[in-house]
Length: 242
Image (tube, rainbow, N blue to C red; front, top):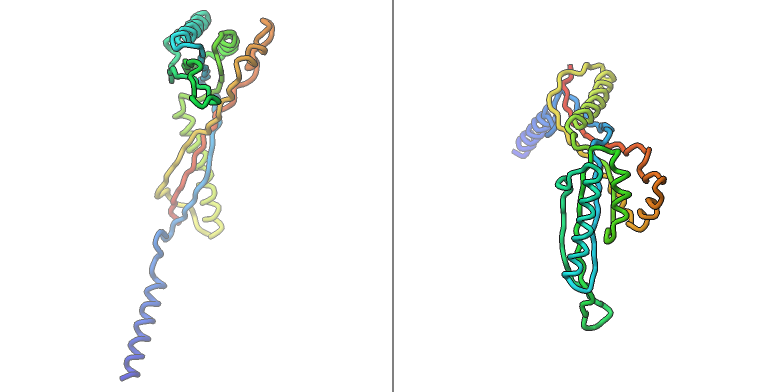
């Protein structure tokens, strides 16, 4: 009886081993090859973004508001003088808040601060220099920054994806050739595209005023080429093998 039991157990184990040899592991597709690759495309920017902060601090809230309003009006005048509609500029933040003397145990209010953040998008890069120079001369302007972006980005995304796919295809084809096989049709693909983010450098307005002091002095951006915008893509592909 024990001998028969051992024979049955051995038969079951052999059957299980044979089945395991013929089974396909999860996630593995027979007669196929998987490849992933990164691609990119560098495009010339089509939009310049000028960011500026109007920040006025006075003894009273109404005085801070008046100073900030005056500075904002000067911003509108600068834009108009350079042929830019003030409505193109966008206000991202406006606030008036009390300023405290934190060294005083009672945290006494010593003034009020009104802050407005303004963002301007320009497609004509020749206007960047004159506008930034004139904005630098406005009182109560705290910071100013310029950076470049690509708004018409869909074509760039397509080119980055195409670059990634070519690399994945070439890698898969090389492996197939090394294994004496031929690369077949594309069975599956996924793509992930993102834009490289470049943080703008905020320049204190006093420094800007010094740089823009002389009328003959070129703007900080003059004659330089705007930084290209890099679009990155990652493609995963599954190809058939012949």
